[in-house]
Length: 286
Image (cartoon, rainbow, N blue to C red; front, side):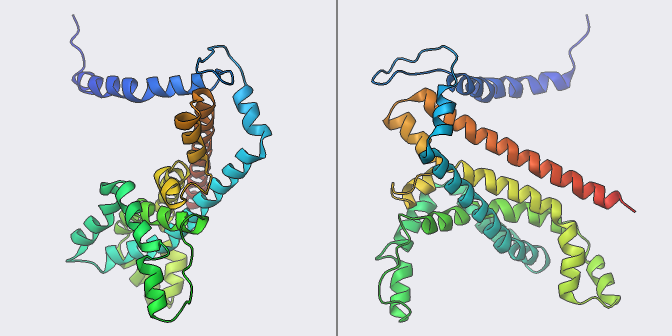
């Protein structure tokens, strides 16, 4: 009798856990999105229907929520890239002795989860918070700026929460780039901005794509930050899905909303894969 492969035996528990914890609930979620629930009833009818998706497509409320969610996710990705690239480059090139400490501090928002940092931002961004108080003390404003209950506060919270997802992939890619490349380019007469634009930026593109995908998907499906900083006034796709599941108790429609978000994540992943393929093709071109 042939003995089983040790690698298969080692992978079996992880595969079983993945199937039970992720694949089975995911399949149930997709199936539930095609079921229906009559108005005024909590009984789910397990018959195939597209009514939930037709309802999403026909109602401008959900389109506005989707547009706001995509806009916030895109803005979060862009801001994280603009802020994260210099931080990652400094972390790799300059922060030698303090690199471990700075990396640990960068990871704090991920370790604490979304709730604690978001609650901290409520105290900072509130009308009587630290930010408005500081601006008033400096004489820059006369009235408090309303950061909570609108898109600006949510955007600040999303950037604060998911900035590490941009910094870490960028730092990993930049750490692999030898300093000799920059020195060689500068020895040939290139200025430092030109070295950054023509050498560092193209070689860091894979890290930028990876970070952009992580940040965009995380912001797209974020619920805690929009719910708390939006104070229930800003409807994103995740908060709408929560309301349908927890308040309205319409699980089939909430599942359909979740499937739409998963489809958007898949589309974002496909775009990043195509971008990565285009980069590889450009590198191989003569």
